[in-house]
Image (cartoon, rainbow, N blue to C red; front, side):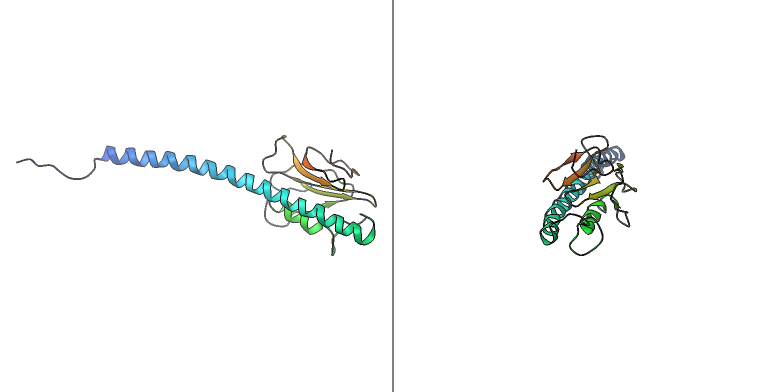
Length: 158
């Protein structure tokens, strides 16, 4: 009479658990990359909407002066929305003559908007930029591209 025990050995179970662990780590790494790309796409989309809103602002007063300020019809809320993709919460939008400073976590200076009577430009840091300190920049000339800087008083994406 043969006495076969049914079931799996401890080694077989450990091998299966190890394989599942390896597969799970690969999937989680891919998801993190997808989340980062999704955040960057949301930033770009929000700034694209800001560019259209700035043109509506210009059409009502024939000037861009104040387009970055807080108020009805301005792009302030849209640029802040883009910046909040970096880190939820209260991220300060730096206006006027301030210089852009890269921060993937939404630190001060990572969202900058400059305006004058004739032009405007806004930039928000990206989570995964092509350049080491890149942000997505949009301006009144129609530019929408990754830039490494937006200097003080500059109204066009470099």
